[in-house]
Length: 217
Length: 217
DNA sequence: CTTTAAATTTAGGTAAATCTAAAAAAATAA
DNA sequence: TTATTTTTTTAGATTTACCTAAATTTAAAG
Ligand SMILES: [Mn+2]
Ligand SMILES: [Mn+2]
Ligand SMILES: [Mn+2]
Ligand SMILES: [Mn+2]
Image (cartoon, rainbow over all chains, first blue to last red; front, side):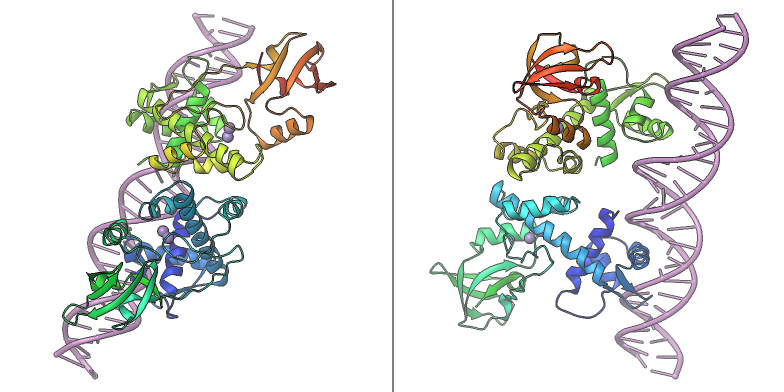
C-alpha cells in the first residue's frame, strides 16, 4: 500500500523533473510541498528503499521507472477528476485543483478507466495540461510561455503553468481564458510586462502573468 | 480537521445505533472495523474529548448531536458516490462499496451538493438504503426483513442490510435483485430457510439470506 | 453471595510522517 | 585556498492510530 504522502512526493518530484534533466534537490521538494527539508530527507530514504527514486546523499533524486509510472498515474487521475468537476459538475477552473488533490488518491484502477470513458477520453484538463493515457503516454503539446513571444507575434491561450485559485481568478477578470487569441503589441522594457491586443482592446499584463500563460502560436 | 479514522468510527457508531437505543459497546465497534478493543477505547477517549460522542468508562457510547451530524454526512456522501458509480460509470451494485469507502472522505461540501444535483437528488442508493438530504433528513422507509414475513405474504425486494461483494453476487445469481416481486410459499422449520416464488419459479433461500434482504409488503 | 467469565481499560510499544536544533557536506566568495 | 554561506543530513521529539499483555470492572453462573 502506498500512502498519500508517498504519492504526493512522487508527483512533486515528477513535476519538478519536467523539462530539466538534472537531479531534484531536497530544498526544491521541501519548498513545493511546504514541509521542512529534514522531513524530505526522511522520505527520500524511504522512497529510495522502495526503489521508487534514485537517491544518493547530498546528490538530489530522480524517479525510477517504477516511481515515474506511479507519478504519471497520479497526474492522470488528478487531471481526469478536474475534467469531471468542470465538465459534469459545472465547477469553474479555479475551483477544482484542491478537490482533485484529494480525489487523485482514490485507489481503484477500474474507477479511473471508467471515469476516462465517461468523460470521453479527454486529452487535456481544464488548465490545458495534457492527460496521460492509460499506458502513461502523454501527448507533449509543448506550448510556449507568453513571455517568450516577440513583439507582433500572435497566439492562442492554451494553458497555465500555475494553478492557484488567485491566479486563475485574476486571469478570468482580465478575460485571459483558454482559447482566447492574443497579439503582443508591445513589450515594456521597464518591468517586462506586455501589451496585448485581445477582443479588439488593449490590455497590459505583468511579467508574473506572462511567465505562467501557455501559448500556441 | 477530521481524520479518516475518526470519520470511520463515527459512521460505525451511527450504523450500530440504528434501531436500538442502547449504548454502543466497545467490542461491537472493534468487531465491526476489525480493530482491537484497546484501540477502540483510545479513540473513544479522543472522540469524547472532541464532544462527538458521549462516553463513560465501561458504559458504552452514543453520538452527540454534532457527532451524529458528521456521521450522517459521511453516510450521505457514501451513498451518493455509490449512485454515481452505478448510474454514471456502470459499475455493478456489488462493486461499489469499497470505492465509496474511500470517496466518502473527500471533504468538499460544495462537491457533495453538486454531485447530488448531477445525480438528480436520488433518495436511495443501489442497495436500497435511503440517502440523507443536505439537511441530514432521511426518509425512513422502514422496510421489513424477509425473515419476518409469514407464509403466503407477498413483497418487493427493496434493499439489503449486508453489503459484501460475496453476498450481493450470490443474490445476483439467485435473481434476487432490487424491485423483484416475491411470495413466501413455505417456511422450512428445520433450518429457517424460505421457499419463495419469483418469476413463476420456486427457489429456496437460506435463513442467512432472509435476514439481510429488505422487503416492502 | 461468591466465583468465574466476559468486556473494557491501562500500560507500554511500534510505525508513519512530521518538527526543531545541531552537525556535516558542498558550493560560493573573498 | 581559506572562509563563509547554503544545502543537506542526523539526532532527538511529537502526534496519530494502531498493537499486545496485564489489570480492572462488570455481568453471569452456581
Ligand atoms: Mn490541478
Ligand atoms: Mn489542472
Ligand atoms: Mn456501501
Ligand atoms: Mn450502499
